[in-house]
Image (cartoon, rainbow, N blue to C red; front, side):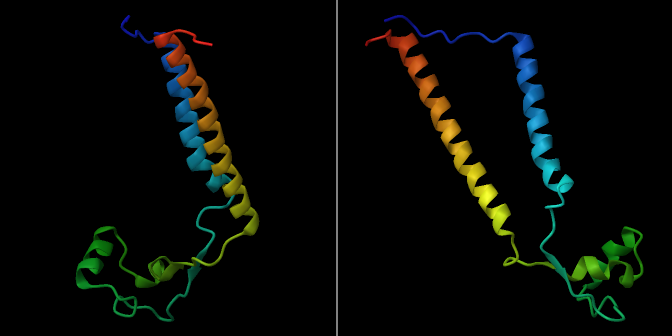
Length: 128
């Protein structure tokens, strides 16, 4: 039986693949920000007249805030008290995410099926 030798990809093809992957990754990270979907479920309950103690910051935490140049607890009051609301979501966004995940799964299965058939045909010949 002949040893399997996979097809070679050109350098230009590899560079194109890398660029496409980078665009897709950056797009996937930036798109929610551009659409205003990131951080939308944060709920803030700021403390009135905040001090480091009322914000439940330990001395080590206060030292780190000071190292960042933040000495006034009121300036970070909303950041510290912000909490993620796990039950606030959009039904439309949930449905879109379900369609995207299922569509991706179907796409991967179909492409994998085609590629597996090609590899088997290369390795063992076309046995129809």
